[in-house]
Amino acid sequence: MSRELIYQGKAKDLYTNPEDEDLIVTVYKDQATMLNGARKEILAGKGALNNQISSLIFEKLNAAGIRTHFIKQLSKTEQLNKKVAILPLEVVLRNVAAGSFSKRFGIEEGLVLKRPIVEFYYKNDELDDPFINDEHVMFLNIADGNDIAFLKEETRRINNLLKKWFDQIGLQLIDFKLEFGRDADGNIILADEFSPDNCRLWDAAGNHLDKDVFRRNLGSLTAVYEEVLERLQGLV
Ligand code: UDP
Image 1 (cartoon, rainbow, N blue to C red):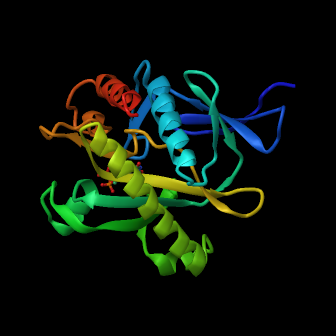
Image 2 (image 1 turned 90 degrees about the vertical axis):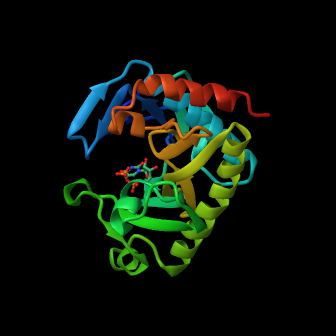
C-alpha cells in the first residue's frame, strides 16, 4: 500500500500513512506565498528548514506537556503527525504590535503590549480569513465556550514557553499564529506547524528573521530561516 494525498496546501501536503490510519505524513514544500496565494515563489530549501524548525519546537512543546499532533520527524522534509480535524481558526497571539494589528489600531510596530492579546481569525480563503470574536466562533459552531477558554489559555501557555526559548537565543517573539485540531478522542490538541512562516522574530538590532523578509522584500528568506534553525539547535 502506498501513501495517498489527502490535502494539498500552500506550504505542506498531507498524505495517508498506510501503516497506521490514525497518523498522517506531512511533507513540507519549498513554496512561499502571501496575500492568500496571490504572490507565490519557489524557494529551494525552505520546506526542509521549516520542517526542521517546526519539529524541534514541537518536540520541546511535547516534552513540556503541551498536547500536540507531532509524533516524529521522518526526514528533512517529512514528519509523522496524529490525524486531527483542524478547527477552521487561526489563533494569533501578540506580544508586540506589528503587521495587521499596527495597521488596524494605528499603532507603531514595536510597542510592547502590557498583556499579550489572543485573536481569532476564521480560516476561509474565499472570505480572506476574517477577524472574528468568541461569539462568532460559537455562532459558526467551531467551538463552545469551554473550548474557547481552553484555546486561549493553551495559547498563552505555549507563548510563555516559546518566549523563553527564543529569548535564550537572542530573538524576540513578536507574534505568532497557531492552529488546533480535534483528535480521535475529541480532545483539542495543537496541530499545523510553528516556523518563521507563521511568527515574527526580531533580533536585538531589530532585524526581521521571519516571513516579513519575503512579504517586505528584505533579502534572502532561506538565509534567515537557516539562522533561526542554527540558533534553535544551540538551545540546551
Ligand atoms: N499569520 C499567519 N498566517 C496568516 C496570517 C497571519 O501565519 O494567514 C501570522 C503572521 O506570520 C504573524 C501573525 O500571524 O506572525 C500575525 O499576523 P498579522 O495579523 O499581523 O498579519 P500580516 O501582517 O502578517 O498580514
